[in-house]
Length: 284
Image: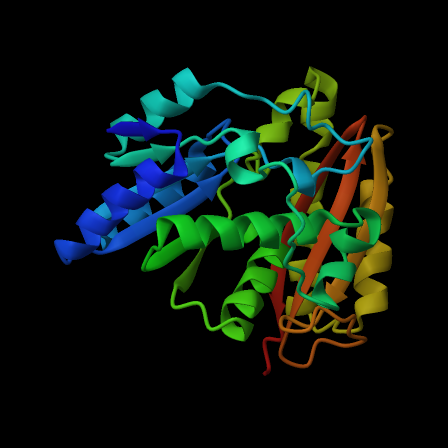
């Protein structure tokens, strides 16, 4: 396995891989790898001849009061895990490589980027789509892998790839959860023991919503009201948003006719956690 820091070095290698008619699978990450990332890597390894993992804590997707400086970074551990999973290359650029002096060009998917998390994190998805576009141009993969935990991000990137005619297939892998149901996240390390226990309420609220839909309760206001009540039983929890939206345009729906995305962002203590599930009308 190689760790490559320079764009031109990686491009030369990718050119050779392409000349050898090998397929390239790509997993973009910000490092602090956990089992959720490893599932993406395993899928990429299974479906491709050559696997690239990028590790880059992207400054343009963090707001001024967010955790860019303290975001967990551990290249040694990440490299160990990647090597174990048979990754061929880790692309590990610095900020100057990705955003040279005078950088002025950004990619934004309108409308979708302003909803859900985008309402509370202005500029976040512009940063995501810009860096992902750059990484796609550098790595030139056949397939790219993203997690369902970041459902809005995956929907936005699919739209971007479609709109910009980028010849890459996007694969979205199911959420990986801890034994108690908490979705795995690099930010879970911020939780103290009590907060870690309380954080399971997100998963429990998703399960409650699914039970309600199964029982024939399809009005989204009723579902949201019930799960808000459940989350509020935890003193450490503070809801930022809970929405049930259309799976393509991310706009709120009043009733689940076929499917809807239940998405939420909840602070547990000072840590912002996101989670989601797809609700299906059993009679649809």
